[in-house]
Image 1 (cartoon, rainbow, N blue to C red):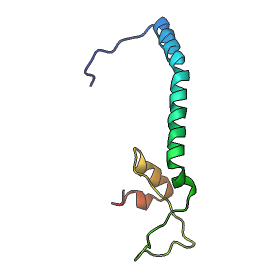
Image 2: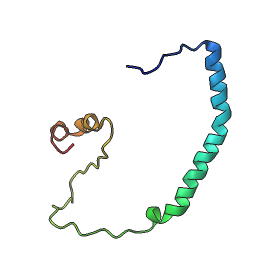
Image 3: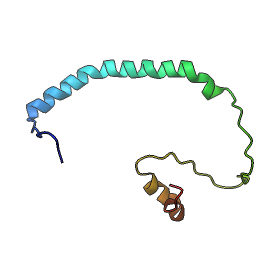
Length: 93
């Protein structure tokens, strides 16, 4: 299963590695925040400006109907099964 040997860490090694991670945490948080703010600046129009949607030709109206929007990811089938078991087992997923 593993391509390499598994190394057992001592308590001292765990404490040392956690200290290294803690040391880097501030810089990583700053980098993450700066990156997020850059995307907000560049893409804010996508969030606040109205967008033009194409006409939905041939699609039944969704008025007074429940809608679930699903993004395919690990566990999608299991998550959808909580909503409607028949849909989660269909070929739609």
